[in-house]
Image (cartoon, rainbow over all chains, first blue to last red; front, side, top):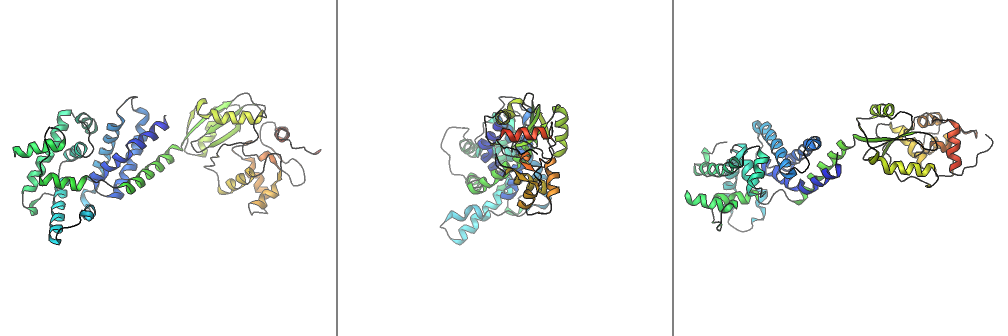
Length: 171
Length: 229
């Protein structure tokens, strides 16, 4: 087994895979666990990967499965997530404005979490990881057309969810 | 709605055109653009690397060195260092024994052990004075490790006694146990148990092939002049 190659793969793609997991689970410590699990699975499967495969898409596929399993397990006892962290540096604005913004962000985040897993993953991969639809198809195990459809369906669903009254956002 | 769709396309990079402000996309960007931050990422990558190292350490490469001045040797290397050097006629039998020492996946590979094999050959044929090989003492007891590391500290050309090693590890009454630990030295020659002699000036023992003859051979290679013992 080519360990140096595996090492270099970790160096090349580790950061973005971690970012993807973080975007999916929205918790630093949990994303760390998921990253370890992802690379452990990758390590075990590595000898069976064909030479010249798209390692990046392959890693995303594993990471996506790890996140899916993880979120399913967590679904029952979902921890309350704070969006305050991301917005400390927002600076100015009235207190009311900030509170309102946070509420709005939490709402969006809740809506994102209510998306079917595939739509959520496809959206993240396309928008924040710059994957081509062919790569998203590889990562999600679907056709390119389906990858694209999932991204747009996800966005449309978010738009619908958020058009409702805040109280009625589906969990 | 159609306007939304156009905005989505531009935002996703699927369509030409400038991204128009849209509250949903603004909120998404605010939530997801920044990512987990460099410190957290660094920490996560370290964790993943550490875990891979732990798993990796289970792979051990081995080979046999057929023609050395002390006969055939079995050599085994993990990613941490040399795991075993054994006076052995059968690599298969040695690999089997090694499998009991740790959770190892043994892989026969001349290439992976070549640098260590060269060091051993160079040493035995007098072209090299000391070893640069890191040691992997996984699977040994704390006492064994302590003894073996103390013996590594006995330099070429010098000898020590079992009692001296016992004192060196703060177990002055354990000379006999030191002898026992050395008898099970998994990496002889590299961990120079041949430099440890009996306190009465005798050679003590040597479990390697040829017994005391090999011990003398190694000591004389290192320029140690033995008495008439």
